[in-house]
Length: 253
Image (cartoon, rainbow, N blue to C red):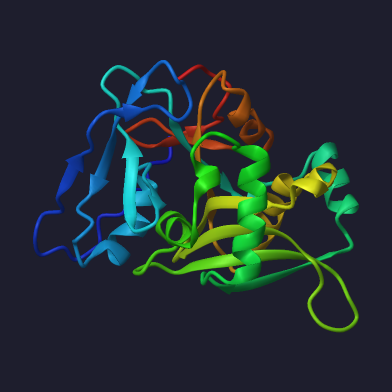
């Protein structure tokens, strides 16, 4: 087991964490969920975040959280050690299929083009679920952090002059030794390209170029079809509340 939780952050006062109220689970509709969150008013969140990732937390907007439900431990934090990753046959086909695309890394700042693509994606993938009503304020509250080093990884068609058509945006956090995949939205009319897979492959390549150790993928849930794709990235490490071990998905949490 690899236990690499950092203990070298200079913290003068104890970090405060809070439980949220119970709310509907976003993955199992018959269950109630709650989260453990760092004090959102703490000025040390930017320093705390890299350590919190190693403790199984992730970011949503300005909140650093992890699921902490009363009777469920299904959400397992997972990450890819990027230097050891090798694409499988399906992932290699995805890379070839999207060889006509180019990537751009930009500051995490919403513009009209990003928001229009986000609305199209939510309308196609989450119709009637509440998120499809998101406006610009909800976009920022969900994806943008005022204290972090977020980036938008754009995927565009390649053109000789000027930027090509925007097909996907992978919201990505940058910390000292890792990248964290926050959320990806893409053109629903280009679903055959496998842009979700391609975005992760580009994040892995980015992490490799920058000398990062890991790409954090958020949470994996055994038996949930929307999470099954994360098992395809190997090796995959999972956090059990004490440390990280391999391979997530080989055993039921």
